Length: 234
Ligand code: ADP
Ligand code: MG
Image (cartoon, rainbow, N blue to C red; front, top):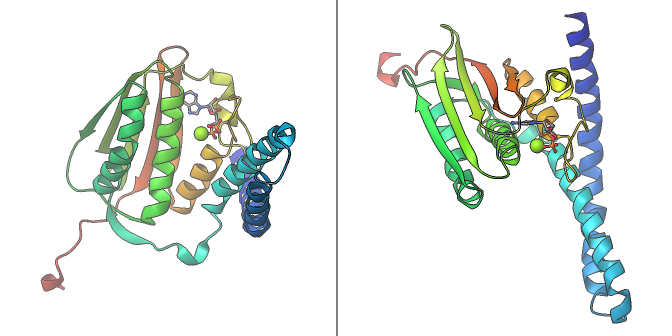
């Protein structure tokens, strides 16, 4: 537990600082991208590839800062009772085109009553998008993605996202939520770190179970709120 505590403190500090820095980087970055684009119309054609390279590097900086921005807008965060099935359904429709493109067959199993969770809708959507994106990336030749929602105890709702992808070696599972940990050539290593931070702020947990070359199950647990009481009963 001491180890876990240290890790979460480290993440909190890194996350807050990085979020602040990301915010500050955005405006100058927009200027740089704008002028780079403008210069493309002005330079000799043999210099054009340099500007293209600049643009792709600027885009990478933007991608990294965007991932941090998710945790950088405290004023926009609003905790409300939301139905988790609705949130997951919206994320799945959002991911549908990508699934088709990648030959991923998406299934869902929603068991039990309507699961209301006190949460920021956009932040939770971001968590599920990050996890499902990773699942897709683990199945470059297609496969099955199953999202299951069920009550795990009286107070918790468990959302598990199962893929039939490459899997994760046991020894690296503890590193997955560390900032900048990635095994992908074009990865940022920030998706799970951001997700971990959001889930932690919602008093939930995230766990990974995996079999190399068989697939992975990512389980997020969140505290369940009692079903909404109709106004007339108050
Ligand atoms: P990124 O996707 O940019 O690499 P993430 O924080 O989202 O960063 O993920 C970190 C690493 O965790 C990935 O590079 C990948 O190796 C591993 N990973 C996460 N989810 C899965 C999954 N479903 N299957 C296999 N590996 C995974
Ligand atoms: Mg990712």
